[in-house]
Image (cartoon, rainbow, N blue to C red):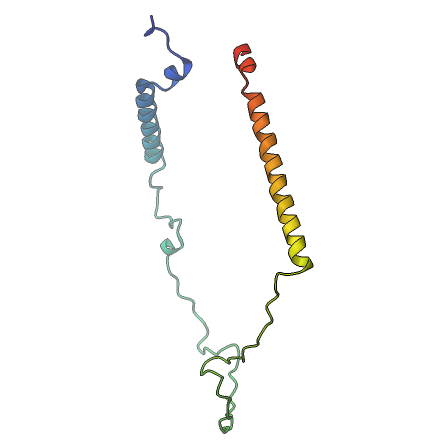
Length: 145
């Protein structure tokens, strides 16, 4: 009796149906490839590389559209004396000393208060989430369904 009873999903995804669908897909693909084969004549292909190459013929004299300017020669300059901290490829700036702020005083108090407040708020959110989960999975709800 258990073998006779099959679910809808088992009927849709049986091995026979899979084989039939694969054979049908292969047959349809073969039919489309055969029907859409070579066309009559020697039509150019779809790709640009398949197009026939036709040379472009210009007039007897080929001139450039823009004229070239004569190069301007720059006079040789004497090398400039560079500071020793500069590198060969890139300029290196002198390092500046920056004062490091200390964590004392009112800023430290404010940081402590906000961190305690953030931890407390996160704990409250966790507690309310666990309460909602407990209410959702209570025994009374499971028995009624």
